[in-house]
Length: 308
Image 1 (tube, rainbow, N blue to C red):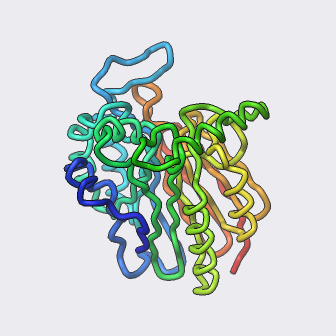
Image 2: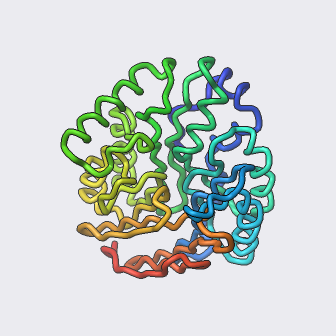
């Protein structure tokens, strides 16, 4: 595992039990199936102890019923790991106390991506006592490397202890607004230069080791919408230049997908939306194909990839 930005002692103390989200998954030493990588995906449960916004179809408390359903379904399947693609809670760090125990029921290794609502909750918890932690990391299985990018790296959620990260986010946001770019929204973030260098290093190492790479993040990279990572074009260029088979994201609750070159970009539907729908997916990747089986309203799709 590669986790270049471990929590400081101060961050860990302030985060308490929430610090567990920053631990990369302890995956096994082998694939369950030597010919197929298989993992589960879900995103944006966004729990809050507040009434539903029925007009916007946002059902905050329903995460406590929806997450157990998805977890029970994953537990019935032979998976190498499960990923939550961000926004576990909606606004308050205290709400993690109701949600995190649900994840203890999951029998598979669990990788966490932190979303913009997670960053909002953590920022209020840390206040001015510690910087918003960086949360980009990589983990591996034989023949595979999984890269998790942190779209909160350069964002309006950063505080003074993050150096000039917040200033960089404001500058980028203003530039995108001047250009009329759709992702010029204050709830989006960007990947900073240090993280970009680390991502490319991971891709180079994977190439030298003969590993295939899958990328996970909260903010979508493609197609371009108002929910994209603010500098998504930079990552799209990097991903496509290395022919990465697939990138998975959340954040845009409607879901979406695109194929650019040899790379697929898939955005999952948000679990928050609707009173009953429990969208999640199981992904199976073989040497020449990505098959996504959707459940609970999540779309199913299949596309060919460049065989190795």
